Image (cartoon, rainbow, N blue to C red; front, side):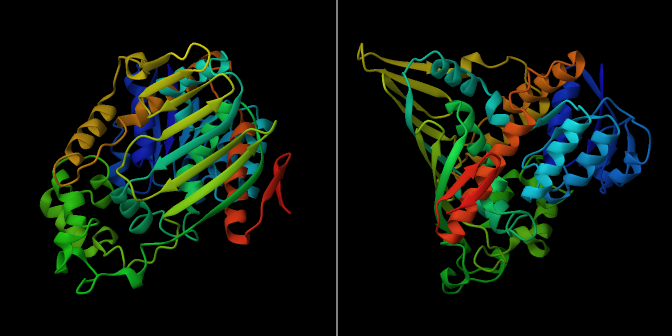
Length: 436
């Protein structure tokens, strides 16, 4: 039985820990979080109001899940590595290149079993796609098109009203949201990125786009009924459900509690009257070692749905929508469709089920969209299983990204952001990007 400490018991930390506990292979023995309600999510675990209280003691668990805010990863990661903990670290690793290097160095110096939560690598969909590509099913990969459809309401929730709305208080959009995708593209191609260019900006969620007659809060707004970003329409159908995203608004998720949060908290603000500055659309062009290329688009202005990918090879192509893979064979001219949903693990945790229930609620008439299955399409569960196996056996092979690989995918994000801001192609040499 693996013993776990949870540092940061918000949505992500709690989800990973619950997957671990419900697998029957782990127990949470310590939890550090400033909020009592979050510490209470793990009855029987020793509670700490600050991770430093836990870190001041000799090692209390085999491993630690670090899921604090992005800017607060580096110090606990270094300290818990020093204490001998194995580490499951939420992405992004940190909000500066220097701090990412510090974390990787600490993990390697203390020989920690170390995994960054690149959950997209672990889904049945990705594993199936990767196996097809590695088997040469479409020959040599020449180019890739990849779309991350953030979703209009998700952008409003997290990146206009929410914790990731400002680069100076969290980090830039590409690192906060799309580090998953940049890492995934490296994973499926099997090649490091050598050059990057990028374009994008904050197009829509700006004061000058505020409709005539709009108020600063949705509950006071005369034109709220005609606004796609209406906070009451996004949140109130989930009243009474202790699920994301309403669990972020208030400890009281009743209709009364949510209405109070919308009256007084950040999530009730007009999306055109917030202090946000992160982009709402961005494209990234990448060249891989060997010459293959990829174009990646992140945009807010979509339904919240699975990523969509088209991969073009010398003997065929593959189109994927997060669930199905359609393979076109240039030799036989046959077309095959693989449903990867049947390849996932049968076991589901209650955390997954609650997220899937939230998806059902959010897909009602007032939302008219679909979202990815709970737990990142099975990736969360598979990542946690891989981490527990590595901790138990001391064999790192179940973890699908080394510390150096995780660092590389983060450096791609900084290279792309540098290109977007400076208007130059950025070359990644080794682990350090340079503009030219």
